Length: 296
Image 1 (cartoon, rainbow, N blue to C red):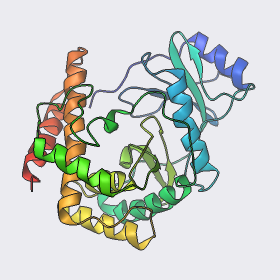
Image 2 (tube, helix red, strand yellow):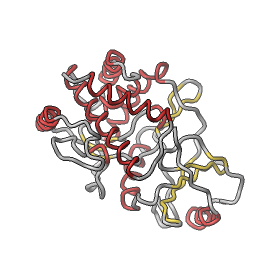
Image 3 (cartoon, helix red, strand yellow):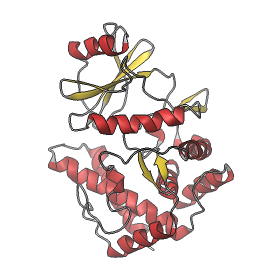
Image 4 (cartoon, rainbow, N blue to C red):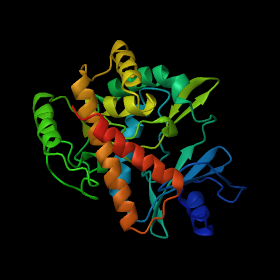
């Protein structure tokens, strides 16, 4: 896996002090992960530095979703506000935010899937009361989610007019919409004492049908196995999440949309000059295989 390389510069450290009143000059620990952004621990805080292309308005919108969730469930980790009430400042062209440090480690999907399903149900209930303004920039997952519309990276070479028609009809008949986390997988959560205690990273949040996020999360936590994804869905429904039940066709088709967007993201990153390692290439090819295997 290739992670972003962005230094914690003296300018970022000064901004942390000026905007949040937090000493930014202590020893910094680069936290593991981050394909687009990097995070550094400074004592009880985490400094997060994003890519230059992510706009301030978009980041603030996503952070507001996280703050709404954090006010309602303890696991949601939201950014801290600056002295002037913002959550983002720009330094050297990049969005910088400050977060509380939360102790923990990444969970194992096989061990924590059912916990994750129940937590997602509670998260969706928390987010269902949010009424944000329209997202300033569309999220990557939204393109093609409602039908044939193309987006960044195209369809990653996975054109499927039948899937386009199915998605359009699904969203015509499923009108429930509210903010979603947008990237609910193990790498954006933490466990402590074998309990899921944190949901992180709201960069991909958007307003959509909770059924989509349920299906997308089910395949992540179900380790790409449809029978394990079904267990995830059932645990979520038992917890009273906002999504309706998904039959096998709906589960498969919504997962296929996720696979297609991931393929598009891969193609877009190649066009930007990213050189992928063998792990990334194997992952990409596996996702393409899943897309074809799940075709109804």
